[in-house]
Length: 194
Image 1: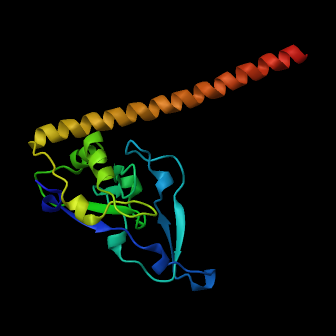
Image 2 (image 1 turned 90 degrees about the horizontal axis):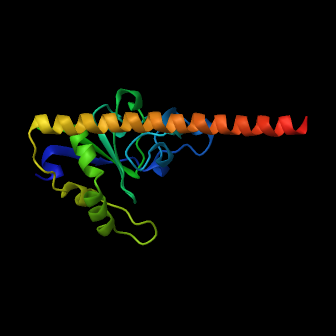
Image 3 (image 1 turned 45 degrees about the horizontal axis):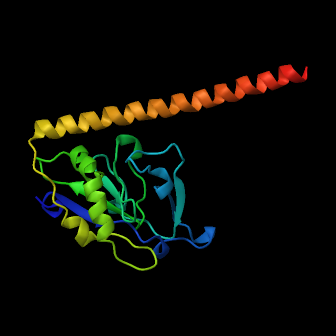
């Protein structure tokens, strides 16, 4: 089945059309997702989200909702599943917002599939543009999603969630080890000086 058959795909907002050039023009300020908030493996970074000052009120269709999938339109075309914590973020035009509307398809499964090497390779081959090559809506619509029963989709989604949780814990552990290493070496140097 093609992605366009199971989902609604909408491109993010072209920011230059709504951006307040000076603070006096600003009618609203929105938290906005950016490329630095997404890791290549489809997880969110710890980086804070940016703020966007708009000269107009922006419609709900340009904001993240739980269960939707964002796809980065330039290489490496990372897909990320939106959780409750990432709801309400403004989506800029370098992302596509995918809303699954087919009851027999889980968003977590689709996000996982979009992050496979096969799909990323195909998207890279089909990118257009000379200055900054990117993927367009028509290319995304034609991605063929393998049909699996809900039980298998659920298993894939759960395995993916466990993997990401384990990876985050490992990254935190490595950061703590780095601090420990620096503290120990610093104390050795201090002892040597004294």
